[in-house]
Length: 143
Image 1 (cartoon, rainbow, N blue to C red):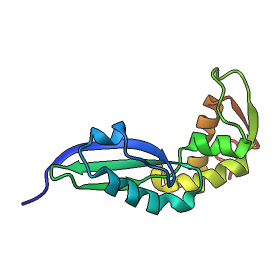
Image 2: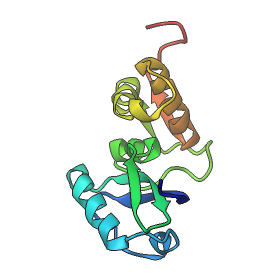
Image 3: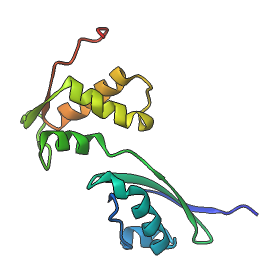
Image 4: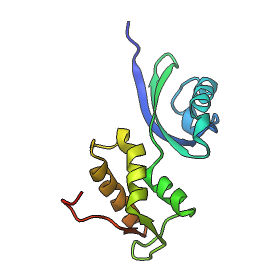
């Protein structure tokens, strides 16, 4: 008989630092088992935030899928900042098109495109919403 899915949750933890807590308690899974597996699989990702999609089953078992670090966190890391601007019009820094392409290559598995240029344009939108100016972005159609 197939296991019954009881819940699917999208959470974020620092790499290698997941701990049992209220966000996991509500899933009804083996929390120590999850945290051990998550921490082992993400230990090499430094201090990055790691999104995870957890599928919980009725027998307390689980599956999980790791995602790439959020683009906003990667932009802040490139700029050496801890947070973006509260108001989009307040500029907090500049990021180069080459930096955005580097982030896009890393994020490509989680994006809805296979084109690095298009992915970089999506991430440029995230940067602009955070108050970051994009420098050197080619016009649409230029390669």
